[in-house]
Image (cartoon, rainbow, N blue to C red; front, top):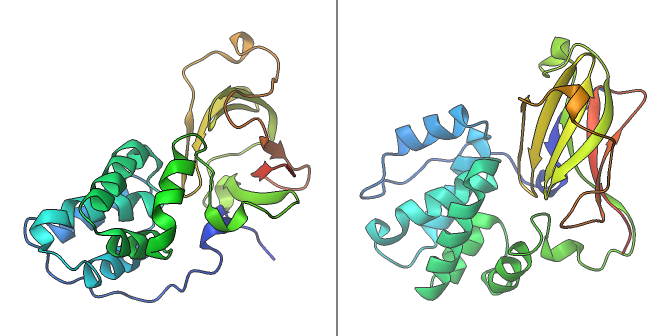
Length: 225
């Protein structure tokens, strides 16, 4: 079986075409186009946004933009993380926990705890708190011939910050930015000779990026607590 990049949190998500309802003040066509341009999964975006709008209990002009930001983050646009967390808090303050919960794919009663956990741990997911074992968070990268970014096998991984790593691929250095829902992989500006030795990263120190000898994919894993 050919493995593809992806995030474990989406493994059980049903991917069905979603018809987005109209939302006052929200250009849905533009939103979908932006999610695609920013590296998100438009199918996931449509499904999560439709779920949130269907259960909103409020005028969409009041929360449409917030739910769109949350849905885009949930669909893998890692660059919207900060905006999405602010939007989640705004929805909770407005008494719209069920709507934003549906957008995140969780019960509304879990949203406050999720928000609190995410503020200090970008890989936090309520259902995984007490697993008691190591688990896979995501696979990133991949061989260019199968749609990935790399022509060579990824080598040493260097922690560069919370949810950020540098990886040597051949003579090039690439940057990975990842969280629970999404990731980006792009060429790094730094020269490989200046990157230093592989080190344990700050922040969630039980999160590692592992190079697998038999794959062009890197695995983001959380060690057992």
